[in-house]
Length: 180
Image 1 (tube, rainbow, N blue to C red):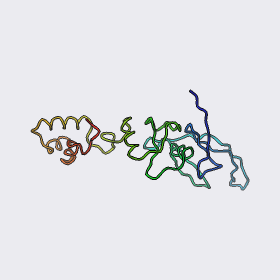
Image 2: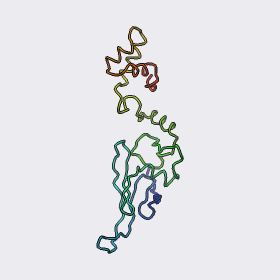
Image 3: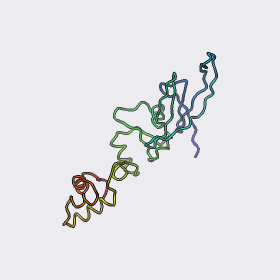
Image 4: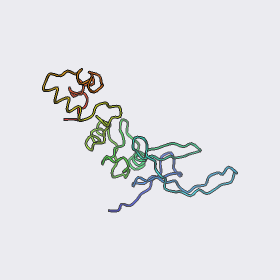
């Protein structure tokens, strides 16, 4: 099914840029001062997004010589839904950070967004968290073996090169709560 594309101005950049309900950003036709002092026509175009280190698509917008980087999903939500409520985040309903169509976006509380991310396995819990020294299999193994008895937290800590507190928290489900 093909969706029609609607464009709205970007707050703070009216007359310079607009964003569409399909998740695209464009610059608008405008006149700019050339360094020689004359006015030059600058043709508008669809901007090519870049992928940020955390996987979101971003674009640079420029106003009065100052460039600023913006996440596209936030631009779409602000233009079509309104400014972000305090304590809310932009949420991708399908978990795909590259799908910035309005029908896939929503302002959500931090807790609701984290629950949604967990439901489509895009959260940074467990082994997806960059600093984790444990993984899903090691935590499941430790819990199973520890339940049989005869092993201490220190034993697993030495085996996995982490602290006994890290092991205790994983086995007691203070951390790694998302695993069965």
